[in-house]
Length: 184
Image (cartoon, rainbow, N blue to C red; front, side):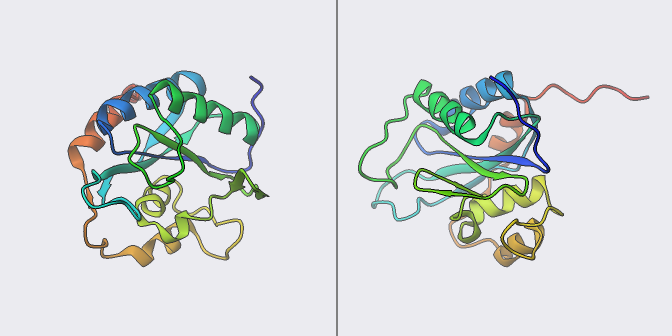
């Protein structure tokens, strides 16, 4: 798979609600092995968007990639990793799931096609995506707005009711990355 240059951060949003830590750990380990994750955001637990009563909460966050193929190839790779974790896509886009991986941002690239929109248009209204993205690339300006990711995420301070940082999930997922080498 050929990698393409990108003029800014490549961010992939992640989420899971069915045995979430298990599937997130396996899915992100696979993504790291294939493309190299350079940073993992804090993980947030939140209520499902438009979910049914009794649906389990989601764990959400984002990763910053070291490299990436062109957008369609990256999308296909993310769908493959989801499928490896048992993700089934049905009629309900808000159904509980084992793993969700979405291209949130690829530098200043803009795509508006029926099956692939970059940047992901939904994250502006979703704190569980906006906050992790801002943590990974705070100063980066949104390609369609005059604001940095940090400025856009600041709208969600304080956190919405039903959403909180999950410190244990954050700790476990960050163990996927090797420790930084000693530079002394």
